[in-house]
Image 1 (cartoon, rainbow, N blue to C red):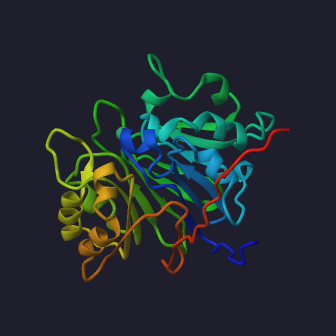
Image 2: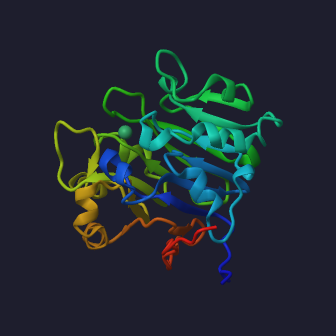
Image 3: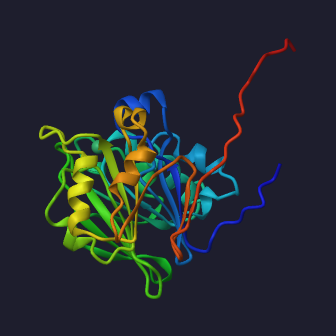
Length: 283
Ligand SMILES: [Zn+2]
């Protein structure tokens, strides 16, 4: 049955809400990152495993070859494995040198790049992220990189802006930093990678406790939590998210395929019917 739903003009669609290695390996949640259509520009943030698959299987359709920007927060596999195939889609198989990729330096430079040089050569513009750098994209959309601290790799969050539209952003894998409240203060919506239940001083990932502390100082209208680890998923993220909500901020647990309207911040939760192979026949 065809869906009668149509996308809002400006929206985010989760291509995955799972995070960290065990959730990814088992695909307890999808791990394809975030699709956005914003100010006439289509893009993907953190195209991890399954990103292209979940773009190609989205309902209603979204088109991989309409992507004009890819934002990579860091090179870890659960964020980056599909960056090369998406670059191939963005450049229409390499025949159109177009689009922009913003990524940390260590994701493209020796000794251990995740973005292949032969793919990079086909892309219109490659921008290495640095803290506070604002890059102008197509249609008057800008993106600002926000430095994170995350386990020996370069890592950045991003804030997207366009005149006349709501600003929004992502806080990626990081320890909670005192700079976030100021840097993200004009965002109406933030997707926060919240991997753990409790804060672990040895782990540079956000936790539910970190979100509570951050939301004492930062007051976006809407937060969705994503990049959830196994323990968090098994402890009912929907209920946990509700407990994080404050007078100013609604907090909702992300779901695979969830859509957020970036104009009015309404959230569309997907209704799934399982498509499974149930048997085989000899041919
Ligand atoms: Zn990571």
